[in-house]
Image (cartoon, rainbow, N blue to C red; front, side):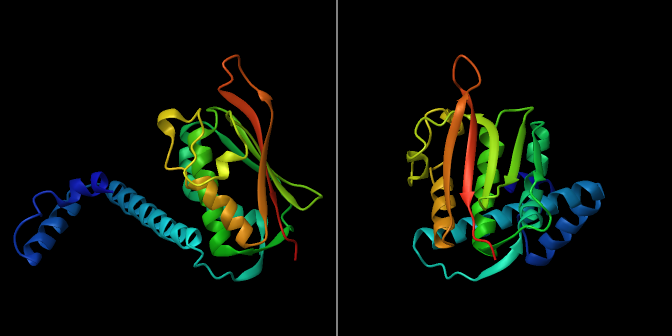
Amino acid sequence: MAQKIEPYIKNAKQGTQDTRINQVILNLSSHDENKIADMICHLGKRIEELDFHLDSLNILTNKTITDIKTHPLKKTLLSIYDPFKESFQSKQIKVNFGGINEETSINIDFKIFNLVMHHFFDNATKYSRDEDEIIFQYSKDQELVIKMHSLTIEDDQDIFNLGFSGANTKDMAGNGIGMHIIKKGLNIMEMDIKTSSTGTLNKNKQYSKNIFVITTNMP
């Protein structure tokens, strides 16, 4: 956030509030409108992420009250995916939602489900193989099935434990909260997630054909 803001507040860090405001206005007027719009959109996304992280703390400390309602699955997923679209495109990863019927709806707490899938997409942007495809399908067993070629998961049980980072994530590893939030958030809505692999893709076993299955509640 600081890097994005810096060009617009230079020479505006000292003086009275009015002086600083006038300097910021002068700085903004000297920049291209598209760059200013990009900066504002970037800050909006980062602020939204901060809100998600605060919501994550509520889930971790069991302070979340659910509000379960019926929502269209595909439309909901597309809205959560939208802020990540640019990140996937930069890695030439296609995210395919064609396996979900437009009429399919599930019972969720929208805020919690939004948080869960936000963490899922965030992980997918980091750990999925470049120039590949992620496939979303909804099965007859009322399960949301997500197939991708991503880093090999050494232990498919431990990845949902708080603080656990997979051995293959290396310098990409976060703080081991994301997958724990995903599972706990789903459990709060009486849903669940499991993962499995159908084999590795290369000799060094860095990437595998991973499948994530989320059980859902139909209306």
